[in-house]
Length: 197
Image (cartoon, rainbow, N blue to C red; front, side):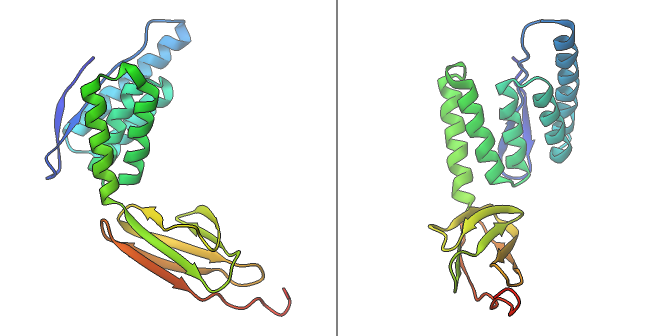
């Protein structure tokens, strides 16, 4: 196990980089692990230069080739450094789920704390429409029909909201959210066309 500490922007975060690759197996598995090690080493190098976007790509490649749960910790920290709280929460949660009892208690507590910090950064957007059964999509991800049961939690930044109702043009809005902001988007949908009716 290899731990290194890297500075993360001005947030005083530590990017602790781990490398845990499995035991030697068949030749094909060895090749995958060797390729994973190369991607991981490149990720370490890039993270050390604060190239977190490229480091994240390398860590993702390493995990795809040799899915060791410890790599998820690095992926999560790179996502924190890049300001992607939703992705960081998902990755850290996956790390805890896959690692289970292999993750030391102190590290589990640390990761839970980091998840809580990222959750505190999330904004909430309540979307309402003047008609039911309109399909809501945010950043290309479909949420379901209106009325939505609860506000949508999103990372800070700009998001594309699309709301479509049968027989009517899709309504698109661009919304910018600050950290921990609560915002409501009220949409009046166009009437269905005469042809659709």
